[in-house]
Length: 419
Image (cartoon, rainbow, N blue to C red):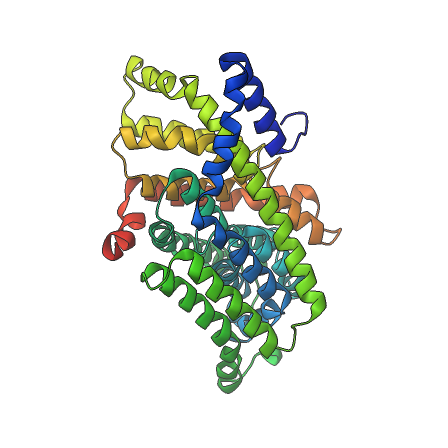
């Protein structure tokens, strides 16, 4: 991986080499068994459909209308556009399931509009990148689906567990923006009186949230309420996204071609990594990695919470150099059995992992949202500006992580109520 090899190849080659050296030619047969094991899971059907849903909505122009709505509703408040941007990011996260969609689309739409209105460039870029990372926690999250597949967890339970922490983190971001802009209004000035709107215009702008809001509520309600399986709900979401695109006059063969090709590429990448990771983890655990770590815990007399903190620290370090799926496939098969043996709730640990991946997307030098922002930001915003803008929000994410470690009920209350 340090040489730049694709993750699937790196896992496959190291796994096959280790299997052959340790177990002989018969060890390579594990690859076939691992491929069948990885693919024999109906949950994977939901992956391409949720990705398809998010791409269709992204290309249908909903983000433009949502930002226009926020400008009318909250532009008169210092920092209001920043708060509204976080709200839009949370909504896009619930529609798209991935981090990049909100970061790129709002980087194109909201970034120039907020800079034009006098917002500080670091506050704007940090807000968009941190808000975009909410796609990990707020369901339907693609990363959660893959986590559930690897850890053999209930997707509905993970979605329910991620909802409250996701909303809590969005609230922390909004409070931070409002406080900073209250203390220093030049960071996020209110719109001048001549650009403000009447109450009637504000109420009329709310119509833009009806269609995406109904789709999100329908999809999540079907999953969390137990009406459908995640795979069936993903089909409902994909059909709903096509309906919205049709109603907006955006549906075309060009859009469908782009969305279907992109969905196929993303899904193909994830499936290859999944096969290689299942194979690698079987070899890794077969060599006794789990027992080594268990023995270390016993030998050093580490408390269970100390072990959890070490795991979270490892996520933070790995996040500086690896992407979220690489960390997921490498660590989850190893860590989850240990977490279960220590007596912790594995759903709670899943939320801790997903929240750690939000920090991974914002920590230099290898943070995807940093690169997404660089690709759409004007030349006046340097990469140093982008790195510095992320740091306060990484600190807020660590605060959110500490709250969930200290108060597991934040993550476990809703799944406990529903399941």
